[in-house]
Image (cartoon, rainbow, N blue to C red):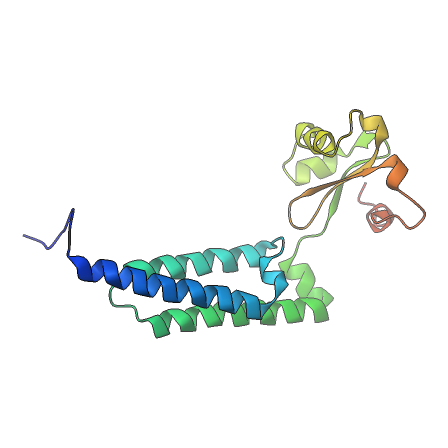
Length: 177
């Protein structure tokens, strides 16, 4: 017969979970505060991987009896250092940035849905229309552009909001149409 416990395994495992959980939680909060706002901002693909990894380490820390707090803290610190290193290289190298980040993509411009770009991003017109409605636009006639940002949000720019120094002119210039 195996040692499977279904309802109660004693008080000691519960006390361990509480002590380790509180310690790990406070450590994560402290490490995230030290690592900077980027870790908590809208996430790139790498940021998402780090967030999932932190969650996995935290879950394992709570439920694995033979994992010490020092091992968990080492894993948390390693993830924070990786986040810092990747952010550093991303800011210093366009090649690095291009490898690990996506680029914004125009989905709607000058009164037209850009079907090629919608297809590339596996989106349909309904997502663009929904984003415009959420921003308060009752008609696409009032929308200058809709852009899928690197954090997967949709930016909607009204015609009255665009100017000479448009925030999306680089996309138009790079023939993202």
